[in-house]
Amino acid sequence: MKRNILISQPVLGDEEWNAMKQPLETGWVTQGPLVKEFEDEFARKHEVKHALACTSATTALHLSLVALNIKQGDEVIVPSFTWIATANVVLYCGARPILVDIDTSTFNMDPNDVAAKITKKTKAIIAVHLFGLCADMDLIRECAGDIPIIEDAACAAGAKYKDKFAGGLGVLGCFSFHPRKSITTGEGGMVTTNDDALADKINMLRNHGASISEEQRHHGPRPYILADFNILGFNYRMTDLQGAVGTIQLKKLNQFIEERNKWASFYNEQFRDIEWINTPVVPDDCRHGWQSYVVMIDENKSPHTRNKIMELLQDKGISTRPGTHAVHMLNFYSDKYSISPDEFPSSVLANNCSIAIPLHNKMTEEDYEYVAAHIKDIT
Image (cartoon, rainbow, N blue to C red; front, top):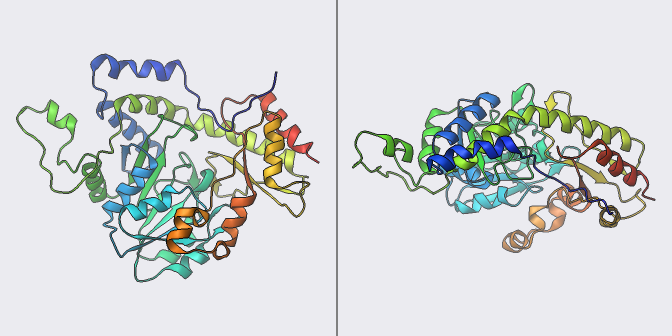
């Protein structure tokens, strides 16, 4: 029987199933007390004052930009090598995403290119912690000055930079709970901040701009009161079904990261003598969240192209993916802004030569050994 090792697979079981019984039995399935519990635990875990759940990391980023009053005519700096949502949310606000190149050793934005792209129109910087490794926030802060930094921490739940958790490194942090992330609620996101005013604004924005929550309105002593609406908002609320699952998943986060770190170290050791594989770089002062294990293929030394290597592994039942894509090479952005691939050479290299190798908490020791052995056998 052919092996089938998935690129990612969430760990969900009886605890998550049982946690959903409460909202199903009470009938309170929209945002309510279980979302609040998840938010409180997430904030405590990441050592921030506020955590506000929403429908995805994309909507978390959108809420963050709107809360910072990003509008038409503004510029927001984002890395070119990232999931498309990081750039799309800037356009949702009518602003322009200003792309910067990356450092291929970390896959995160190059602070030197950030410094070169800042103008009087720059109103925010979105620093992506790609694959779970925090961006070099100290250098980015030096470049930014008073410009607010939003962390795209979609991949970085539980990750750390210099003993401080992702989500508390910028003015706002944005997380994802998509099934490819280390913990999941199916779909879902979270905004973190230590700023009380921003937290209040995001709380309203995610609920149509309402001045009070649905839970407050339903449980209050005056049932005839409807919320007032002083700002234009959105329906970006998380459900209590997701909140129930999220709280259980969060309790397992440390264990998940420790297991992934162990097997990432195993991969590093197995691939150490393969001259055509560049393994992930993790600075000593960072805790990688290991949403993905992504290597770079040196096609000048490798026996095959990146794509051929992926096909060979697929034939052995080993799923792989490119790390992510270079935004400026996608048709919408290249057409809209007439961008040449040559403008962001490191992002192009990562686009063409990165491979995400299976790393998740449902893999067995035998699975990891199988993956490593077949990569080492490639000639």
